Amino acid sequence: MCRIYGYFNAIASPHELRTVAALQRHGGPDSSGSARDAGWGIGNNRLAIVDLDGGIQPYGRPGRYQVVFNGEIYNHNELRARLEAMGHTFADRCDGSIIPALYREYGLDFTDHLDGMYALALVDERGERPKLILATDHIGMKPLYYRWDAAERSIHFSSELPALLGFSGVPAGLRSEGLDAYLATKTPFGEETMFAGIHVLPPSTTMVIEAGETPRVIHRPQRAETTRQDDESAAGELIQGRLRTEVGSLLNADVPVAVITSGGLDSSLVTALAAEHGPVDSFNIAYKGDWPFDERHFARQAAERANATYHQVEIDPASFPSLLEDVVWHLGQPNADPITLSTFSLFRAVRDAGFKVALTGDAADEIFGGYSRMRAAAQAAATGAEWYQEYVDELGVLPAHRRASLYTDEYRSLIAGTDAIPADALTQLRSGEGTVLERITEFELGHRLPAYHLRRVDHLSMASSVEARLPFCQRGVIAPGRALPDALRIRDGKVKRSLYAAAAGLVPDDVLNRPKQPFTLPITAMLAPGSALWEYARDMLNPGRLKDAGQLDVQAVERLFAVQAERPDDTTSLTLWALLVHEVWRELFHRAALGPVAVAGRTAVPA
View 1: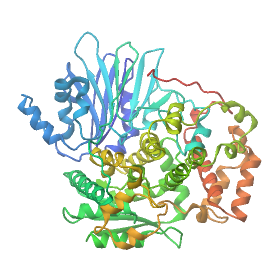
View 2: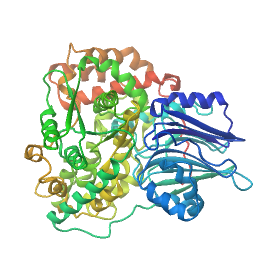
View 3: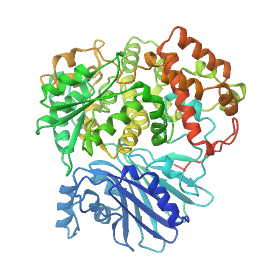
View 4: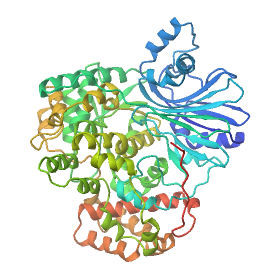
């Protein structure tokens, strides 16, 4: 696991490379390496997980192929054996060291052979002109941010946004429609970020850039499941078997591995399956005081059932203001889910306890139909009722008409006609092939999961030098989940039917039978007059700041505070929280601000 960065067809000084590396050293504190030549440079920060004494990057040989790699390749031993039979030799047994040989044998198809999570950069120095290849894993577990300069035919890239801004060739202009897009989806979807001209390489994508040429983008198709289950019990057995295999694979490391147990079905099942391979340590987050949605009782039950060593992490809500700036900086852009503070604190505790790897239960809801918005849409569609707008509204902090009421006239005019979600994604969601639930599942997996969940988990775990591994994101679990008929995901008002069947007998009945509840901060209760969080929000969202930014109507925000003080509700509290996070982000990256409601141009790489 590492952090990577680089540039191509550009000029950057050694000082710039050191600056970029330093800005994301937390994600790879064990070693670093780089390579440079005329017009290009690549580098990495390493978090040593496999072959602790090896893994020196860049991999490969100068003059031929050089690679920097972020992630884990779980089938690297199998691939190494195959490549050795072809005549290749390797200096170490680190997972990433196989990539140059794999590229030599299979060319641009080399990623088809990788089982794992990754973002990588490969410079092919053969031929008259060098070539840069960037690639991401099948679901987007390892983000890669980039800025393409069409005029200069140059690109800069990095694993984290703050590090990318360390390149002098990367301007940090704010994306003018970013605030509305953020409130519409809780974080930017698709390839966009909150910075103008800075994008995210989509999942399952290879980008090829030859010196002086426009990038060629290859979207690699997902592998389909060949068998389709129609019986809930059989589907449960299949999912349990696949998940057991993947959990066993993800436990392999040369450092201690922990599990995150939230108290819900997904992480409790991962905990149970991990414990089949030997003693495990289980971590749960909770908050000092008496708050709604406290799940520690269920988490402890799941850990005890698995004979896991249970670690209760507890944070004080009074510390939230001091935590928030660190969290937002590591994310690089706003994410409106209050769980970000919990995630950051939890992984910090995992590392303090001596663990560098942790398994989580993320992505099960997207695959198996676990969200109430998915259930509501499926039920509405079954009766012929309208489902689309309510589903889209549920993705955001506020529906469109309520967002507009928060804005100044100037900002409303500026964003008129812009889409918060990529138009092609919305078209496929609304009227594409497949049932409504199938289309929603593909949308959740392809757009919301990478942007809203996976980037958050990656950045906030690596902030504490912890590698988060996600069994539900493995192809062996995603493929059969995608192939499930609607009734084996949602039926009779109940969600995740096949996953519940898979967990039967492994997870405590109290966990199986409990009502589903959000794994997040109880922000409605915590954002109350007199609390440290309230005072911080009042300070950050004061009229002077809002007037300077020119996007939010001062009186509209004041009304939100009045409602929250007198009759708090979930929508009002989340809106205030989201605006607070945005203002913290705006202050942290204030050099990017171009003045009130300034128009920032957008630059996209051609498809």
